[in-house]
Image (cartoon, rainbow, N blue to C red):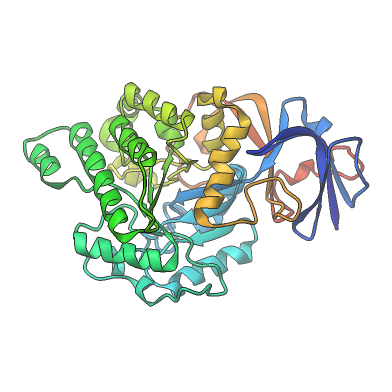
Length: 438
C-alpha cells in the first residue's frame, strides 16, 4: 500500500516547508513541495487537521521506565507502548531496573521481541552495567561481541537509578562501552563524602541531592575521559551541572574517543520545587533528581537554547497510587512531553525542538534510519496540532501511572496521529481515502 500525506506544514531539524510525503514499504518514498501530489491507497490531507497542524519525524525517547518485567501494578508493556504512541514516540530506550534486572542480552532480546510483536513502537532495552545492578561485578555486557548481533541490541548501557560506586568497576564498564561503541547513560546521584555529611547532619534533599548530582557529573566525565567512551548525562537538573557540561563541551577533547552528550526532562524544563511542594515533597511530588529552583529551571532552558543540552528525554517513571503515596520517585511523562516542551520552549522554534526530540536522540543511539524527513528513511511520523490548548487530565492517560506535575495545567500542542514504520499506531480514525476525514 502507498500512503500520501499532502498539504502539510512539514518540519524537521533541517528545514520547514509546505508539501507532502509518499510512504510505501515502511519508508519515506518521496517528498514533494508543490501541488497535491500523487494518488495513494490512503490519502491524509493536512487541510483536515487545521492551520496549526504540522507533520514531523516521530519522537525518540532516550530514557523511559516501562516496568517490564516484574511491576505490572506500575505499568505493563502494552500500557507503556500505548502511552508512547499517544505521546508521539515510536522509538524508546527503556531502563534495566526491572525484576529481574535486564543484565543479559537474552533478557533484553526477550523484552524487545514482545514489543515487536505488539507492533506499536521500536523498543530498545538497555543493559545494566553490573549484574543485578548490585555494583559488584560486570553484567552480561562483558560477553557481548563488537559485531552487530542481528537484533540491534543494545544501543545504550546504563545503571540508571544507581551509580556504580566503585571507580574501578565503573571505569571497567566504560571500557566495555568503548569497545562496543555504545554510550553510557549516567544517572549521577552518587555524591561522595560531602553529600553524605549533609545527609548525616539532617540536611534537606534539595541540598544534598544537588551536591550528589554535581559531584557525580564531574566523576562520570573524568572516568569517561580515562575510558575514552561516550558519556551521556541523564536528566540534568542543576544550573551547576549544566555549566560543568557546557565547559567540557567547549574545551578541547583528546582523540581517544571520549564524547559527551546530555538530556533534560520535560518536568525539569516546565516545573519547579513549588510544584513538588504542592503535590507533596516526599510523596506524589517526589522525583529523582528533585524538581529544582526556578533559577535552575531557567538555567536549564538556557542550556537548551545554547546547545549545551542535546536531547529531551522523558524519564517516564510510572508508579501505582500506593507507591507514590509511599514516596516512590518518578512521574508519568510520555503523553505530555511534546506539549510541555512546546509550551515552555516556544521561542526555540519547531526545527530546534525536532532536533532535541528526534534527530539528536537518533544520533546518540547511532540510528541513521530515523529522526529526520528524508527519502529512504523510516516513515516514523507524527502529526501534531501546535495551536490547540488542552488541560492535562491524568485519569485519561494511556499509562497506568497517573501522577504528573502538570495535572490540571493547560498546555499547548497535542498529538493527533503517530505512525511507526508507515503504520498508523495512534489516531487512526483520522486516516482517509481521497482527503476526507472518516
